[in-house]
Length: 234
Image (cartoon, rainbow, N blue to C red):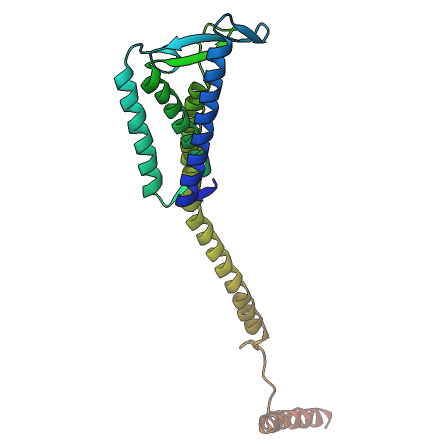
């Protein structure tokens, strides 16, 4: 996952939060002035713009807890800024998620601080769901981006650990393969040398003196055989 340096992360987060705050406040102002009489259809049968006031949290929950929500919004903003300041690099998805989340929190916080209520105007007709606004959408999208980044980072970390554990086994196999390759030629050379050596059972050629001695030993025997034949004839 692409990482963003600390300074750039702060800038991106600030820009996104400012854009969300401005867009949220503009849409709320338009909704309050244009929808005071009656709702207006945006996508017939699916979405309409209906003015509603919410004194609770996002999606209309926890009505009447204004001080608590202001405190939560302030803690959230401070925590995000502190996190971005303490880390040298941040995943891009986390930076984007924090930016829109902080913008949505501040957008609804402005309404609670100024008017003690939050202006909602987006109504879904195809489902039974509370009326909400742009800041609510930003808070939800930001939280989902941060959670998704955590899941992706966890999966990548597990994959890298699994790859790291498999590397020693592959290294051992490669080393054993190289050792076998190196021992193979040596064994062949030894076999060739052994084959080229003369066998101890192979008869050695006789030298000249040995041949003369054998000839002299055979000569008397041949003479005796000749004398015996002469006697027989006589």
